[in-house]
Image (cartoon, rainbow, N blue to C red; front, side, top):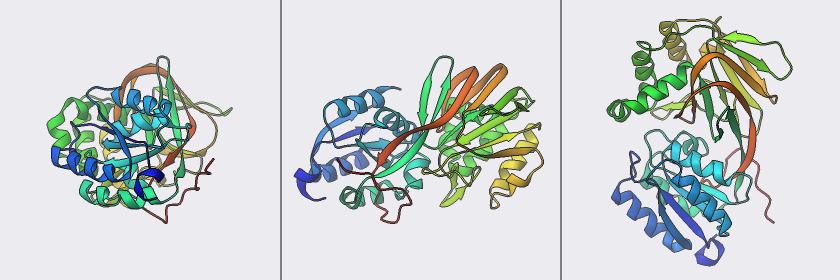
Length: 322
């Protein structure tokens, strides 16, 4: 795809508050996209702005939405355009950028911007997402959703931005879990039902439509190692454990998914609905963004999203062109 005609109607949605979306990076990306038919630049200044801009891009006939920001910004855009036929081009601008990196984008914003031309030249691929529904909200997620400990950890991190900047990627996850154990008591309080199966009483649950859960530098942090964007959801739950044991399980996950054999871990792959009934309000998150608390939740496989990637070897089905 070269020149403005083939790649016309690109809409850029950027989050200037993202960790690595500074003025230099934003200017560099705008200059690069201007070579390929950039039609509009929208600045996301509050939660929900990116989704509004993405829906407007779909209504306006955009070919693709380029999202510069972290997983939260990318998730908002993805949820707004999934199933529409408009492609997502995620440029890593946050602290972790799990989804963008998982589909082949370089971790460095400058390197990702340099790879944009390649991504625009390749056909879009299809990535199936997930959906988390609570009593009051429905949220599409690109990588994972969590109920209980990992969601409480995410909430703690968002409430402590200095820690978020200092403890990046897997060290951030481990450090946040250590801090969170002071305020989170893990106890079996979630009744989880997979499809028409028998409910299981668990302490916390994570479900994923893609992997990895996070990164330790360049190394994948695989809490749910079998999740993939062209397959069923993978889920994992803690049966009954203490915060200290939870941190140990996370540490084992850094050793080649050794945590999956832990006697307090259950899980598997499913195409069925995952229903969660909590005995009291519990923290909920999607893609590292806290969603508050809920009692009744459902997690399902979600719509297909067209994604652009500079990786020619991406293991996703090529989207059909109309």
